[in-house]
Image (cartoon, rainbow over all chains, first blue to last red; front, side, top):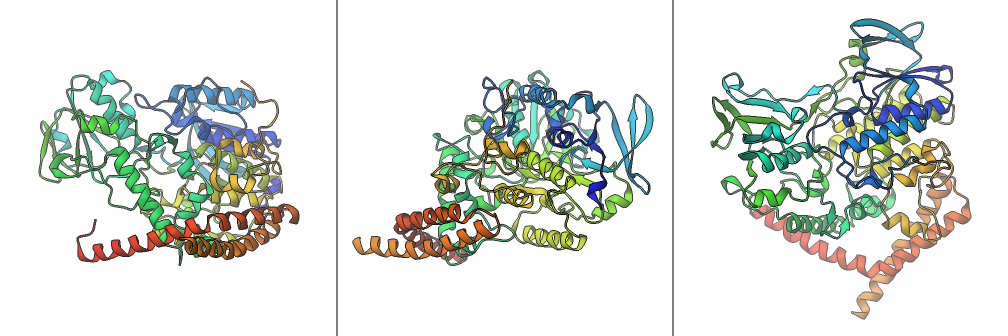
Length: 506
Length: 80
């Protein structure tokens, strides 16, 4: 595809990724329209379950060139973050390009115009054309993932998905079973423990929790988001000679590092706590592998205390069937409950893409793979922004958006389809060799985000090492990477270090 | 103890030297950073390896012993 001919861009989704893309492309003079099915912008931040919010410190989850207001609380609550997105929209003049309450129902290739989008609004259906389509609906926006469980029709209680639990009152006085062990499951179990008659948490696999502060002292970013730690995780696609050495003859070093981390987490979270059937909360996978699964979470500080105090009864097993007045578990026990909350995430999918487009994207049990997590050689003109999960999602999507802007303005040299296929094959083989299986494995970056950011920055000729000052190499090694390190990149100054651009204020 | 510190420092210095060369090459060829800046970076890398070489060697030895012991335990007992 000749990206130089692109003039009109349709962006699907007005969440973080969509807004960052609109801002980056508008700044380069492209004509952008953002289609959002909801009546308010923000994507997952527009509406969530009771008590939902950002699970990392505020400096890790903000736009690099538009920091959260100083008075915004840490671990930003969902409504505060949604308001922040509104402010971002106004500050960068994105609002007039939004079309809220419009549902894109079909995206198909148009031989003449590039792409045709069928959009429903107020019951009417209209078709628009665009040279380029940006899919910015995130990984999990299709529909709630509620597994098929035998006996659900005879269950006399309520079956809810996590997103339907809007306030604590919905659980008051009830006998609640929460299914899952991710962020939403532990949040809702925590809420239920405050108001329900009894709260059960049922999960098949335990995962290593990430503490807000390591050993109760050091914010977790210091132990997880610096380049030293990034060198100790399983090597990236094309490891440097040092990393190859470190994971070859130097293997005892990363091994002992992660075992010490496990000991720290076991002690800090008291993971040896006995739960139902004499089991405990110690995960089966090593922490450096489990961290690349789909349930990495920073639980509320009181989560384990609630389990230890008995306010949450934890059952490490699967849900086998519903009965009339409760549920049966795979370990043979049964629980009398009148409310079952599935905190089992969302299904990944892009049903609005036409059949031939979805066929071209391919994909198996772990989703479809993309070049740089954005492009597929067989769907030119279709770009995915936000299909890469990392601990700095807002920053990652912002860099992706700037990468796209650079591609469209000729600052990134487009790769040939064969080059992209070769790169995708390498990425796929690398992930499938060691990363835990899951429907979004193809999109996981997580602790490798610094390496992914490096790739994108190198593509448009920016220095990937963002720290500044005379102690720069030491800072690179030990200091955590956070949003403001990419402030120059986010404001389009791709050759400047990570300082804030001028004129940013609330 | 003294011999261990010397051995670790020498080892760190050698590894650091090769790492520094690789860093300078990478910064100049891939990241297009001026040679002067890249050399400064390399110097830092070499110095850090040299200073912390004995600590790295210590943890490597501890890791080697623990990893071997863990492997033996796992082959004799049930999987975790």
